[in-house]
Image (cartoon, rainbow, N blue to C red; front, top):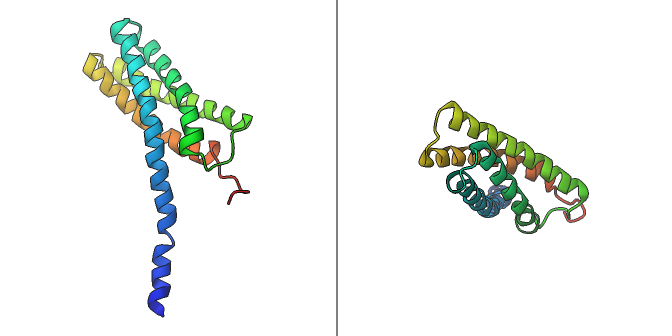
Length: 152
């Protein structure tokens, strides 16, 4: 009889962990498509069209941000409260903060550290996207795509 009680205690925390892992995987899938858009636009602007590095990184990030909202709303966080003006506003405010963070980190590496070659610029871009994505994951799941109390 005590075995069943201890088994229930062990099994109970597994469900929230499983949900968070699934959420991280879904976030990565949608985010991965945004990263692909980000890198594609960045490289076309910087290396093919010879635009300024900061213009290329900011425009690429903004375009990727625009493509990510629907993926997050209808795939990653489809079980959360439905989209509202507040949610859309928060998404773009926090996304803009993510773009600013990503751009600042990119600037530090590209201009500050002189990592401005094709390989180096992409490595700096990848690092800046990764760090900004961790920030986005936390704020999107906490403030933007909140759980709907009526669905709980």
